[in-house]
Image (cartoon, rainbow, N blue to C red; front, side, top):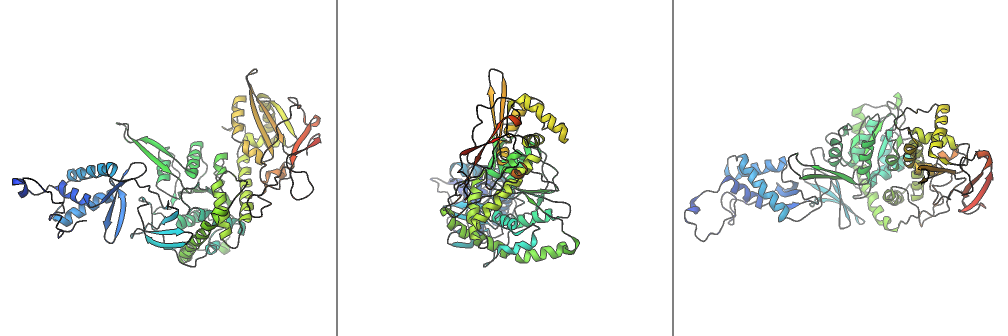
Length: 581
């Protein structure tokens, strides 16, 4: 900002204008809006990728970045006006100055992409400490350091300051503060935490479950303090479809506490937040201007039961189940958080150390088989290799086991998917119309006391065919191939189910040694040997199986794989007479 002694500016901070014939105008004092515009001209005006006007201005010994229409910038303008004139200014003058600032931001200013908490610029990762000095952590394969933040970040009212990370840190100091069942689960959590520091890649959703007293809320607060400290750490799930996107937009790691369930639209929005999405809405009811909210967020949530039950949401999740803490191991809040805050800088520093090494390893990781969250899986492998006490192969095994548990959860929470699994327990192949299948599943539901009054239970053959599509990948993970074809002649859907026996895959998930990628737990209940992740391909239903065939009169078809023994290679078909038990 201009000083009073600067010869290019007058005593009020305005640029001196050269006029051909000043006349009486030279004797006039500048208006309030002229003075404010002089202050604005000293700022750097630009716009973000959504064409929202922003301003960069100096405050004491650092610079800050805020929207032009933000309350903080307005207050700064008023303060600078008082500093120059010794008096206040009216709201009309402020609005005139802000209008000009917005115009210059959009039409004269450059475009700068802004991010919340984590950003990438020219291959370098940045992490916003959100402190009063506007410092950030610069992370590259050469190391990490704390320095003045470039113009990369936006902040909101709930964005709180992060502690400064310490050198020679250790992420394993976190182990005693989280109530996980074993070291494998902790290592999986550690990989997740480091992955949250990587900008512009899809994020895993972490649903926590457990009985009362399992420290679910405490763990959410721990995760948030390590990644995205906030003035209000734990949030309630908005029930307004306009409020949830706004909450996601303003929180890098939104932590939704004490949930009972999620409805379909809430699950859909969280899925968008994990892989990157946004919404647009009218700015005002009186015009056609749009406001776009774009977000890519590390969503966490908890409940006594697993609240993430929809297949799409579970595909993006790593669920953790916490155990109740007995009285002998409980601490007071004051004791617990004092101990945690003492080591938080070391934990955070350890996370940055791992990320630095992972950035070096990541370009060399080549995975042949990737699950739904492929970016996380590939980065997770590099992070695990960087942790020292864990390997990329061990990460893959733990991650695929977790996928299996998520698949179990998706099927258990769907009455119709659960009925299909039970229906196929005593069959190798089923082939018939959707109407016939609905009757069969109704019989299973009656026998097994499955709730057919649920909203998700299909009431018609068409609804059944649509519902089963949601669980096609879950059936495949459970060892059941599902296929549906529409028959235009009969105006009906024809459905095929085939149990895939002993399906494995002889594939190398990375150029490093990887023979096992995980275990799908539902395979055991189906009588299927599942030594690996889902098969790379599933054979088509044989054409010689007649519609409505009974299990005791058909042949079971299944692929077998080479797992290092003398079993046939994957793709070779084996035939079994009768029912598979």
